[in-house]
Image 1: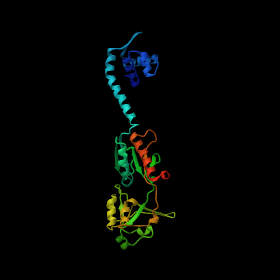
Image 2 (image 1 turned 90 degrees about the vertical axis):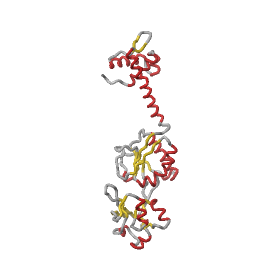
Image 3 (image 1 turned 120 degrees about the vertical axis):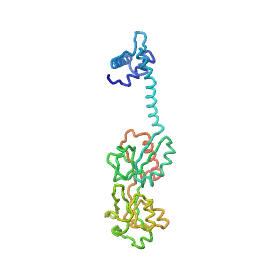
Image 4 (image 1 turned 90 degrees about the horizontal axis):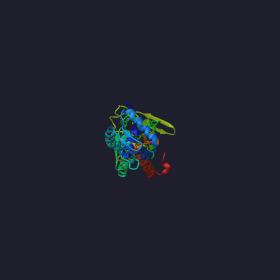
Length: 306
């Protein structure tokens, strides 16, 4: 049997309901002759007569009545489903899955979560912490968060916040024992708190000053991905720690840690929300993009947007 078009089934139900081609054609915005021809084609594809026609009336056959009984509720379900999807344009709802590295979650996304969900209570937000550079489309995420150097060129990117910078810190007792470095090379050979990814890759440390760049892989007795564990280890005097400035700010302010080589650690663009296409973003994602843009403008001012 040839495939049946949903529009032809809708046309049949409309004619059967009105029992009149002219009134049905007005509702369907097509000519009565075209409507009659479409229904004849439908009957030929199904191999059964659906309507009895005379010059004065139209009525479903027995087969037409059976089809009408089944199609009526089914087509209403289809219309309701389409209306439900369209309604989300006005009231965003549904699941929003975002993949992001832990620092971006803790420092940038965390303050946004409650205000966003209070504004859009119909959205279920899922944030997966993952520092691996995954394919968000293949893994079923609506969007991801990454820093500029890791953004794929075919993705749309929206800045999530102002520039950030790293800070190299150590405890006062550690600096008294190992000395205060004057240049990045002075850190080589000293105990460091290492960030090691699950893949085994160690995050290199990068410094830059006056156009000169220094990059090396640190070594130390502790390697992990947990910034809180690294921070406590640094306070306890186990080594140098390189992390986002916000991570150690409170400890530096209280005197538990001290910063070194500040002039070798310039600021860099903050994280970006990225997603695959500008066209017809899912309603929940579109709402989050709009929220992020407004949040950034309110927090940093229009001149700092990228």
